[in-house]
Amino acid sequence: MEKRQELYAGKAKSVYTTDDPDLLVLQFRDDTSAFDGKKKEALARKGMVNNVFNAYIMERLQDAGIPTHFEKRLSDTESLVKKMAMIPVECVVRNIAAGGLVKRLGVEEGRELSPPTFELFLKNDEKGDPMINESLAETFGWATPAQLGRMKELTFKVNHLLKQLFAEGGLMLVDYKLEFGLFKGEVVLGDEFSPDGCRLWDAKTREKLDKDRFRQGLGGVIEAYEEVGRRIGVIFPS
Ligand code: ATP
Ligand code: TYD
Image 1 (cartoon, rainbow, N blue to C red):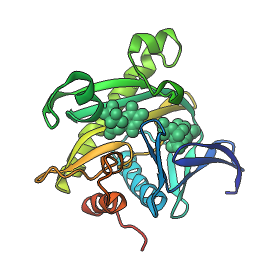
Image 2 (cartoon, protein in one colour):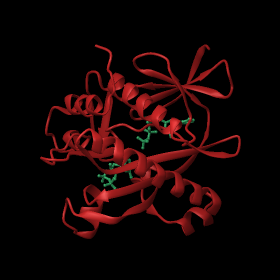
Image 3 (cartoon, rainbow, N blue to C red):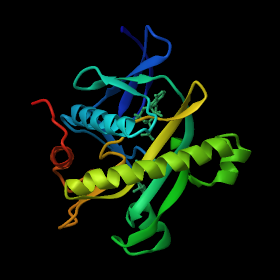
């Protein structure tokens, strides 16, 4: 497999074509952003940590029957994935109230959400990723009702699997965002699962061990990501 030209540079990853038209290389960079790109910083080792973390999670999900775009990890910071037509709708599940939900509804941070909530956001940086619903997604052609149904089903299956995996490491999966794409007509999990796109708290102390450390300027961001990884069995290259 040969890495060819850069197709797209996002806020945290760069995407490259390969000599296989069905495959892409995702390169995880150290760049970190929050608040729709208003806060930006390069955090040493983040690209490696997120790439290795994501590879571990994607393999676990794939083994449990979730279709994912993940093929293999190529290096410390690069992974090979299936080239998909991304669906511009982000799926968010929340097990515990935090972040945007607390701000929007005024509910208490840390309140358990039963049943867990499911929300859709449009992937649109210019508009600040606004919240949408199934009706809007269908009307504007962002996703069909069948695709949305499958995305919801897979997002909850991921919740079941990952809540358990993190609980075994003494961690609470507070909330997370997933992105899906289409590969040969099938809805497949894409992008990444890392502490950049979820909230993870220590189950005993409720210490934040995710991107909120960056958002809130708490420090020790990458150390927290590594700690979470180690607790669930990820082995990082030294
Ligand atoms: P955001 O941070 O809001 O997700 P971004 O575009 O800045 O947006 P990055 O993670 O930096 O995000 O860039 C990676 C890009 O690659 C995203 O646009 C993502 O949707 C896209 N992507 C992820 N997996 C695939 C795939 N398998 N095929 C095609 N594109 C993909
Ligand atoms: P949310 O609380 O709505 O957003 P924020 O805290 O960024 O205001 O996000 C819920 C979870 O989903 C949180 O773990 C962050 C993740 N998420 C992203 O990573 N990217 C996104 O574009 C969205 C909407 C959520």
